[in-house]
Image 1: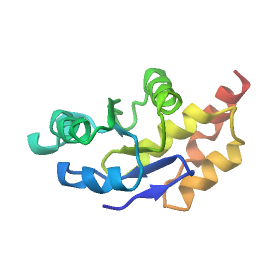
Image 2 (image 1 turned 60 degrees about the vertical axis):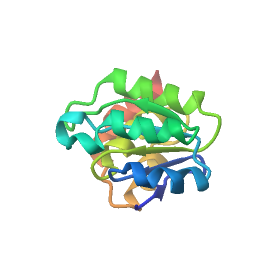
Image 3 (image 1 turned 60 degrees about the horizontal axis):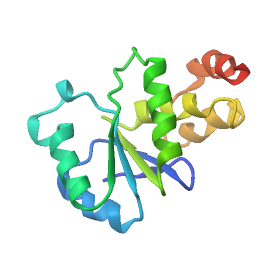
Length: 141
């Protein structure tokens, strides 16, 4: 499992498995967000399988499937709400962590500088520069 901390309270990773959940709980995560649509993965990695493990470990599980190239404002709003509603650190996962980085950045527009929202994910190889105009527009309200 490759956890990439974008902030002290938000991290992203590629796809997790039910076996990873105990490690995530031990690491202090309280909320796990699934940003990966079930249609991309086999049943043993789909949201219901991960949900059982996450909730069995006493953590909160949020399903917010993000389709690459088709991110919606509903995705952005749901990601932001999951962060706000979490009682502690959040881990979001998708195929690589990229989509989880994008919806995080978009949900934080106006709360953090645009340059920071682009630079932090870039440290992990996530290219959010194409989202600059959207980030700036969202920051304006």
